[in-house]
Length: 403
Ligand SMILES: Cc1cc2nc3c(=O)[nH]c(=O)nc-3n(C[C@H](O)[C@H](O)[C@H](O)COP(=O)(O)O)c2cc1C
Image 1 (tube, rainbow, N blue to C red):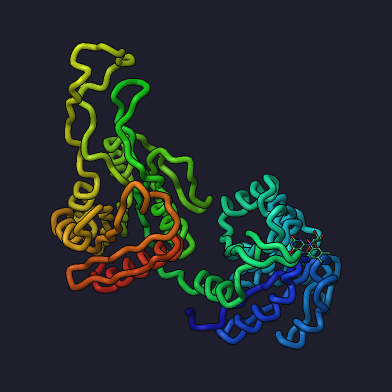
Image 2 (image 1 turned 30 degrees about the vertical axis):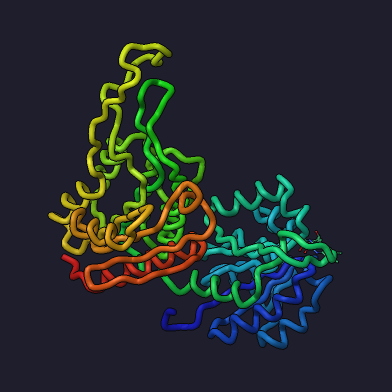
């Protein structure tokens, strides 16, 4: 964590989980954060400001139309915070945040501040699954907000389901991690992600099961950690946060060309599942049943995007850190280690894949292979794996002298 205490603005909204914000306040304070509480009107119906004031030792911001000691509270606070955390985040406050409203101190500060933002949704399953909420959550995430939870379990109504606020200790840990690491500030990170499409004819392709979710998680995490992130992204319906610059491509050759055009690269993370081969002579018109030679598929080898970029950029960027990915069905560590040397990588992240695991699926288990050793991580969410990969990048970078 930084040299001074992180300043967190904890926005509490009108959910039955509002009482858990007291525990969250305690956890954040115990971890060394300075916490200022702001409450929505809904929140004040659930918990008295006095409880928060006694624990935080500060008066609570609860009226957006107030000037105290000559200060417009939400404007001043907006410039003083390192992180805005809304927990619990009711369906209503999520909707108001997504629409840029500013009718209470929480939404007004969110609109005014340039600090990173996170929210921990808490609501009944029906509210959570409603398309309106889904769209509002997606809007916030696309604008760079970090979502923490929700989890599943017993809900206030006595029913069980998804929508339960994440445990305060987990929220505190994730929130502090967001503030803590700005260790990639000033670095340009190029990430390749997703599958490639190699056309056979105008309607058919050679491709693979990659969704790009791992590379996108790394891109979002690197942006949060201060990097200038350039994501060269194969075809996928997934999108990173607004802080990431996307270069959309389809084929391996386009991926190489798009990445090659990026200058001053400090870190290359090649997580894309690039097709090794492409059909020779893609047809200009659709291949028909019964076409002569239709039973033979001739292939040409694609350029090796990782090895080519690594060799090219190393020549001019002495401090370059190169990370490869090895998605293997067997002999994970051996294959990862072979790739380390063959493709000029400082680090290879190996993971086991198959039709039912690895690609787009929930939790991931990886092993980071370096010349001097290896380290396993997981099973964990892709967001947690992304932080692990970047921790490894920072570690390698510290050992590599920059030119
Ligand atoms: C007992 C009770 C529990 C509630 N719990 C939740 C909840 O967990 N999540 C939620 O989104 N709304 C919940 N609501 C509804 C919100 O309080 C309501 O939408 C309110 O307008 C939110 O206000 P705010 O946006 O100012 O915080 C609850 C309402 C009641 C009466």
